[in-house]
Length: 238
Image (cartoon, rainbow, N blue to C red):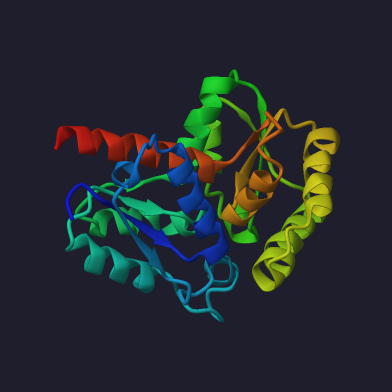
């Protein structure tokens, strides 16, 4: 198979399923052959990224697992890798060094999208796993873009963690009421002008809401757009 890309997924699996739906919906098609060629690695048994980052002494490091994927699937010569987990971008530099092909950087792409829509000085909120927030995976990109960075309060973070882990990951429950309460607190209590969803489980919630809030940026949706754009470009160069 030529001109394909490889998706490093399974973190979590339902969120990866949404990414597949997104790229399929964004691909212009008239028949089966128009869809993109890609390889999905649904590595669901990889250790939890946020748990490791919050307690490295007690939890297994996901990095060796991610590096093994890069080694194994890089040998197949994809055009690029896609990493469908925000928290896993903590390891991006190590993965990039080990990869023979480019890896799309979801947080960077999301902030680049924000710069197209918002002026410098805009109050940009970020919500995601505790690992993503405390390890500042988005912070540098937001600040470099000239935005004012807004972190969730402890109360909001606890609500986000409940939604991600207790509701979605553990019970496959998309709690729309809780999701809307979180956004209301970010917009109304913290005066955010835009909120970036720094977790692909949160992407599931925004998809459920049919992307009706124009002041929410879903990085996985942005990643899907870029994936399709690149894949179609490589197909034309064939």
